[in-house]
Image (cartoon, rainbow, N blue to C red; front, side, top):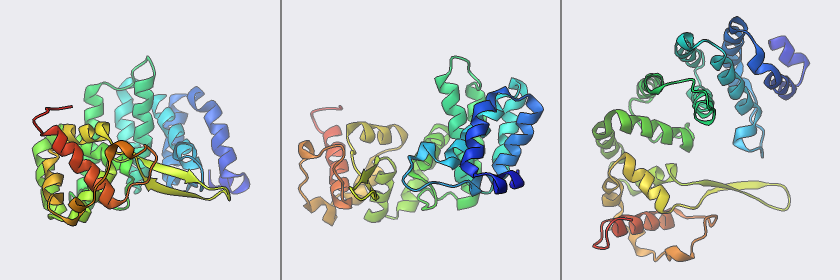
Length: 267
C-alpha cells in the first residue's frame, strides 16, 4: 500500500478504490479496511475542498463500505477493531459517520439500535479517557463534538449537564464556545479564490437542538448579566449567512431562551 501511494497520486488511488469498494469479498474487505485505517490520517485534506469530498473523507467512505461488506455477525466487532487501529479519533469518527450515514440512507439496514448503542458507548468511553471528560476540546470538529454530546445525553443526560457546569466554570467565553458547536460554519469565497470560515445561522432549530440535549439554562445563567447583554441584536434582520460575532451569537441565544420561557409559551 505504501509503495502504491508512493508511485501513484494518493487521490487517484482512492478514487479507483471507490469504484470497486463494494465488490470485494470479506477477507479482502477486512484486510484492506485495516490497512487504510492505519494510513488514514496521512490522507490529505485539500484546502478549499468541501469537507465531505476531501481525499481523507473519501478514504473514510471506503473503509466504511468495506466494513459493511462483512457479514452481519462480524460487522460490529470489526468496526470496533478498525476504530481502535488509529490514534486519530477524529478520523475514526469520520469512518463511523459514513457507516451510520449508509445505514440511514439505504433500505437495507446494516446496524440495529443495539449495534449503534455499542458503537456510541465505545466512542464515549474513548473520548472520556483521552480528554478526562472534557467536552470543549479544540482538536475536535464541531460536528463530532455535537455527535458526542448527543450520545452522552442519550446515555446519561444528568451526568452530561453536571460535567458542562464544571467545565464552563461560569466563563462567558466558554459558554459562547459551546453555542458555536451547534452553530453552522459558513465558508465564504472571494474573487481571488481564497476563502474564510465563520459562524452564522443560529436560529430556532439550533436552539431546540440544544434544548433536547441539556438544559439551556446552563449557558443562559452564565451569559445573563454580562457585557454580552448590552448589545441590541435585531433577530429578524440577521440572514442565515451573516457572520455572527461572539456577542451577537450570545444575544441571539439569550433571545431564544427568553422567548422559550416567556408567557407566550414554547415555540
